[in-house]
Length: 460
Image (cartoon, rainbow, N blue to C red):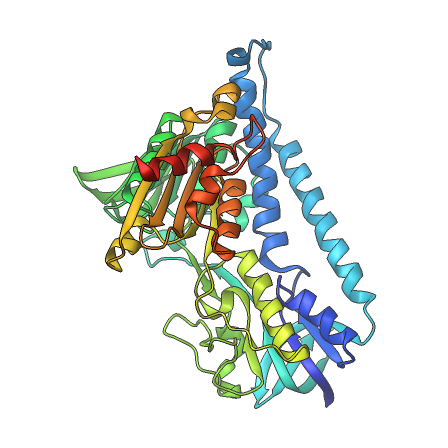
């Protein structure tokens, strides 16, 4: 039996910095990871996908080079080189994180599979087969999620990819069919379209991107369709099968039954927690019907001293949320703060091109709250820098509370949309009113100066 002050299960974007900080504060700390240090983000999430998307953007701009007066004699995509570049980025980030953790004093990094075996007790089966029992008064779970696989007839009998496994595909599909219209689906869909694939996205809901306002969702759909991506909404997948070298997807679509024949199939229907193998019931930890660990505003489970961080606790599954979970816990435990995730502003980016940066309320949310609002929009083509760059697709949208001039939310769908969103996020954090943003001096020509014109429309 090995006793620690803190045990962290999983090596995600919350656990790693928290482990370092707790160890530095003098806590005897153990970090247990069953596969790769650095969690979803580095290994199968942000780092590999955005590295691949960068290659896709170069291919896209190469095809458009004549629009800028630059002529090429043609180009080709070496998918093996693309994947090699991605792997190098992932390995570099992972090894850097691993080295830093291994060199941290007071911290034991243990590679193995952890399960709860009792209250505040964890049993670890190490890579060499040996078994260790560990206890601690404080236990932190940051084990992330895995791709959700829907119960579709025939799916288990065909070869399909998930957002994890497609990262190592050493071929460019002639036709990629994607089940699901998630953000992950859209990013991969545009990536492979730019690399040369025919792409069909199959969304079961009648509304495309149902979490977004209809005008923003419609604009994204228009952009992707301009790129040559076929998007089907209200299309229920009845079954999948194989026909020769193709995967067939049988649909009940808006216009009746349809069969999609594709060379490759990607299932992108969300992600579920890895909690079943953790055996949380042995520690008395309550999970919801999907397996996500239930926490309070301070990230504590129903068992005092056991916490869940990042994706495993449900809610928004973003790296920056996981990292903020770490900050909240560290400050509460070590600095005696009284922070909570309750009311935390949700921000995120959809990394299509152009990208969508979102913060705060949507128009629909604000209207449901009965707030006295003004909604303003600006076509991306009205941004001087976008026009000069010949990247005019998209739109800007902001929601303003007319009673107090506060910015309630924004959707920045344009080149550098995430950076524009961050400006408005900081304004909202600092209670800066829309007229201050409207009248601020921004360098010309930048994307930021579009905020002058966007918020000038509040008074029109």
